[in-house]
Image (cartoon, rainbow, N blue to C red):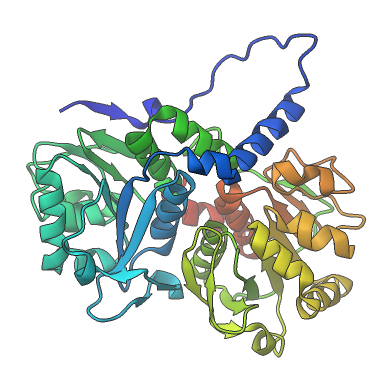
Amino acid sequence: MATRPLVSALPVSKTPHAPSPHSPPPLLRRLQTLTRALAASSSPQAMASSPAPKKVLVPIANGTEPMEAIITIDVLRRAGADVAVASVEPGAATVAASWGVKLAADALLADLADAEFDLISLPGGMPGSSTFRNCKVLENMVKKHVEKGRLYAAMCAAPAMALGTWGLLNGLKATCYPSFMDKLPSEVQAVESRVQIDGKCVTSRGPGTAMEYSVVLVEQLYGKEKAEEVAGPMVMRPQHGVEFSIKELNSTSWNVGETPHILVPIANGTEEMEATMIIDILRRAKANVVVASLEDNLEIVASRKVKMIADVLLDDALKQQSDLILLPGGLGGAEAYAKSDKLIALIKKQAEANKLYGAICASPAIALEPHGLLKGKKATSYPAMWNKLADQSECNNRVVIDGNLITSQGPGTSMEFSLAIVEKLFGRERALELAKTMVFI
């Protein structure tokens, strides 16, 4: 079967053409492109003329790696796919994913047993991947799907634990999480690609490759043009797998102890990829992360309709002191933060005490700037919102730290943002160790 590495599936660096003397400057061109992409994605005319969406199944289970599941769901929904998130747990729509992240599925897998899909994609994580392997309903669905010549995919532990065990990788090139490579059957040609395509099968390595993997799935379903259209507004890294860097000004110590208390508010419209990466990575670093809902109940519906379940309501979170407050992005979520008098008062108190706070994507521009929380600070935000920042001098940087404030640009910078926080709280060594564990570098 035809095989090609990731480099052919994602945009690669090219020598730029000399700009025309009448062309807008590169930064303005980038902003114009992002703005057009955002407008096109929400245009009723565009939606009306779209072909029938591709149908995708993403199963989840207790112990599923939440970054891998949510990034896949989010990116595919950005492309217009109809993604069904199905719980493999018998009779339970709510699953306890890894790192204490709680998700509510759209349906139970058993109720979708006879449904047809264009793609089935298995996230990794343990014991979630073992649960997939042992689920006869899922095994039968995937096998029938493959027999019909349809696209199937898995990442992290799932290629070895599920697809490999079911014999669906025999004779193919495939990859998986590094510590599971020896669990791939001998009939599989194991490779160390970040994303591997062989015929109708796509495999990948871990949380740090999840966004690349998801864009490859978009390309396989819709073509390269759609993949590039989806990838652009996410502010993905220009070079995957390389060490990350941050821009820091007015450096100060963030040493608040070995178990810092971190508050992550979420609301309807919060960007789920950003929230999940922040929560997951900081919990991996052993921080005490509390996820607080701004809504009337714990469950929120994020920007791409992923149902996330918070740990507490905001009123309960206000009773505790936080070492660091972090706002994920997403336009709806950022607007909810900006309108929450209680949350803004809390962040103002945090800033006045010179304690740590941060935001990503739309939130620096929508929630922090209007309330004076960026005054005298260098910051960045989602590129299409740079014009809302009073000081745009450091906007080009993917992650900006100015004393006790950290800001970043969007979904594609969320892992760097989270690792930069780990570095400031625990040191560069722990941040790099985590980045390698997640196969980010």
